[in-house]
Image (tube, rainbow, N blue to C red; front, top):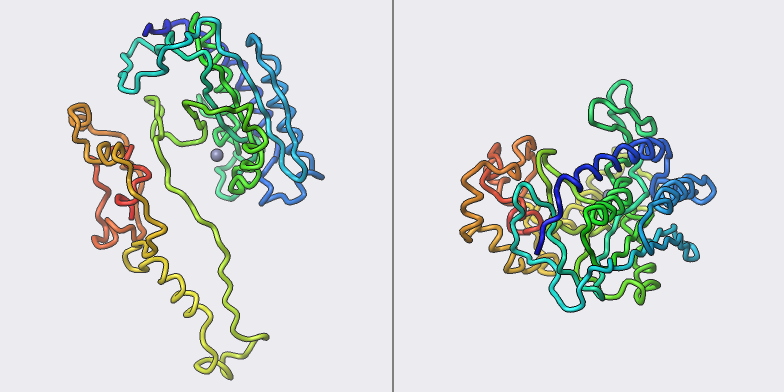
Length: 354
Ligand SMILES: [Zn+2]
C-alpha cells in the first residue's frame, strides 16, 4: 500500500469545501421534509428542488466516466444514482483495504491495491427532518446561518452533506493520483420516514449495484470535530401503532371509571409483554441478537491495541450526555453516569444499553 499525499488531499478538500458551502446554504433553505411530514411532497415540489440542486452540483464534477441518473419509480420518492468507474490504476487481483491498518497522522487512505471489478457503495439521503422547535434567536430550519465554522439550518449535516462529501472524496483521490474501485453513490429521499422507498430501489438496481465489498453510509454522528469518526454499527428500530379500543363513545369519568377498564392500563400491560418497564430489558427473544464476535472483542477491548487506546480518555464516553432513562445497565443505579471507559464501537451492542 502507498499513502496518498496528505497535503494534496487536504488542499483539494479545502478548495472543494469552499465551493460546497454556498450550495449547502441553498440546500438548507429548501423545506424538503421527508414524506411522513409532507404527504404532499410531490405537489409542493421541495423534494424535486433539492434533487435538482444536488444532482446539478454532482453532474458538474469533473470525474472521468461518471454518470448520474435521477430515477423515480412509480409512487416513490426519487433516487439519485451516480456511477463512477474504477480508476485505471485499480489492480485486477489484489485486496481492498487491509482492515487492520492504522493510519499515521500524515497519511490518508492507502489505496493502490483496489479491485478493478469490485464496487464500493456510498449512501446518503436528501429528505429532512421537520422544522421542530427550540432554534436559537436568529436561527431557523430554513435559514442558513454560518457562525464561525459552523453552518446552522435543517439538513446540512443530516444528510445534505453526503453527496458532496462522497464526490469530493473521490475527486481528492484523483487529485492525489490515487486509484479506487468502481463506486456507486445512492442518494435516497425517504430516509427520515424509515426509508420505505429504499428497498424498491435496491431491488430495481440490483444488477447495477452488484455485490459491494464495502458500504459507506454517510449518515451517522460524531462526538467531536477533532478527529475522524466511523460508526461500525447502530441499533435498529421497530415502529408500530398500538390501538386499544374499549368503548364506542366517550363516557363521563363519574359514570364509568372503575366500571370500564382503563385503556392505558391495558396498553401498559401489552407493552410490558415486550419490555420490562422497570429495567428496560427486552423480553421478546426476537428483539435480541447475538453480538458479532468482532464487536464483543471491541467492547471488552481485549486486544493490545484496544488496551493501549484505553489509556487515554476516549471521547466515546459521551460525558456531555445525561442519561435519565431506565436503560438496563443504569436504571438500577439512579444517577450513575455511563462507564467512561466504554469504547464507542459498543454502539449497537444490546448488552450495553439493554
Ligand atoms: Zn440521516
